[in-house]
Length: 267
Image 1 (cartoon, rainbow, N blue to C red):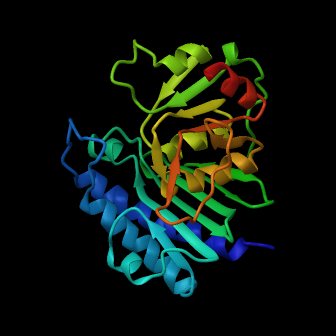
Image 2 (cartoon, one colour; image 1 turned 180 degrees about the vertical axis):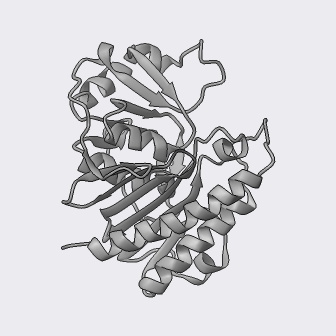
């Protein structure tokens, strides 16, 4: 089944939200010590822009999103057609004004990933995918080009992306086990998943005990369609649209070639 209309609508919603966020970002006062739990008016406003646009186009679809805003409160939270939205993924990157945040819009049909859009407003980077149509990117005003994951098959030559650590000079136990050649730290799971899909990183390691569907869904589609793989750290598949919208057990995204070796090394 084709989901081109859903993709078009998601891209429109992401662009609308991104324009609003860039204006808010320019006026925002830096919160240098912003905690992981921070949320802002910009989050809520971005979410309403996205959800209202999606709801107008597909009024019968269910909505799952991070913030408690009027549109999501009035809609079904689960259903056979489900939009999964993070209005600002990496709010710390927004609040600290380092540019590391994204708008994430995912679409799931009967539990199957169908559409993913990750837009990075501050860096003018857009990455999107539709099931069976590949993964694509556009930077700035440039032309759209297709994305592919890397072909690296040696962990010692790999580039790993992860969240910012408390001390970059003290890698976590899992990073010590993986021994990548390079580590890229950034806020936003959407940004990190897009890095893997674009072939700019080989692995994304998420060691949080639990993350929400909206942290992973849109970026998961990108990695899949770029030829990579996303699972829990134990190899189980992620399932979207379940009550609670939680993904437990950490996650690993890779170019596919490194996946089994990375899981084995971390055990």
